[in-house]
Image 1 (cartoon, rainbow, N blue to C red):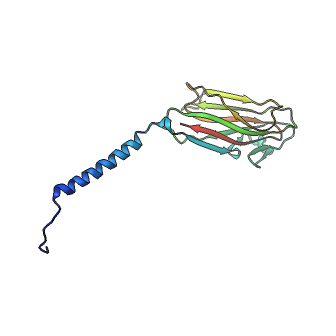
Image 2: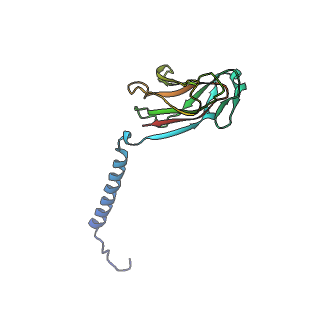
Image 3: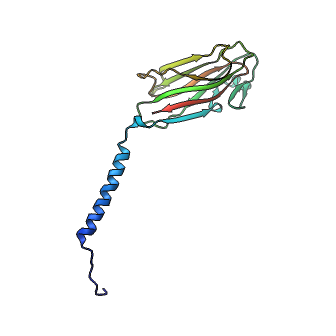
Length: 175
């Protein structure tokens, strides 16, 4: 070549590469081995993700600040899918709630039921909440989750919305 000798011995270069490789492997292993229970994933779904049970229900819809029942004398029945993105976790969800606005001008009751479904679509467990007609205005309703059953599977929320009331959003915390 140009007559100069290589001043870096092969052992020194190999040692540096080995150290760098081991450092990268250690970092990646630490990240991948972190326990799932430490991190949670909170999701908020807008009320407009809810859809009516049937086309006859659709005449009462109004998507102002969520799904709204504009009927003055009948319930609006809706289903709201809740999407999990950590599907490899068998821990499921740790909490769920729905935020609603119930009109004070009605004697109807707001009811929502959270269902846990298995692989075949069968109900594993559920939790229901009903507001009295006195609980008007902006309300956040929490569902009681049975750790042994409802925390696994897929989830769907079914609600019966009173006249002049709405679902603003749904919250879900996933392990």
